[in-house]
Length: 139
Image (cartoon, rainbow, N blue to C red; front, side, top):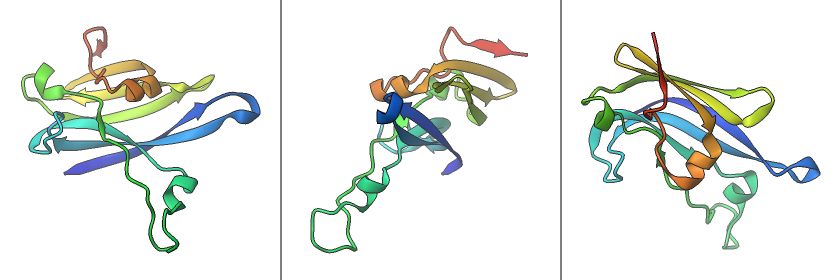
């Protein structure tokens, strides 16, 4: 089961040479270890293809594409840290002055947790940061 998709966009590069990368964030009950067994609801992300990647083809047929979806990166491992409770919902926003700095608010059980940071580097290094010990519980 996958629910609550949200798109986030990162700015890559600077000046006239900058481009955008888009990621799909979603909740899923699949195991974060990669074996795809049902487990506790967690937050995941995957990079979305650019137009060039999506429509490029290694063959002469225009109906097929050689694009392969990027890996799905687990952003949370809720069941490990919260005694089996699931992620209920989440919200994502970026800072106005830096489009690569994000705030993610998670609702786990009846509690809210906030994470602030560079989500792009988290995705690049494939390390689940949410929720970590340094996060503040909101009451």
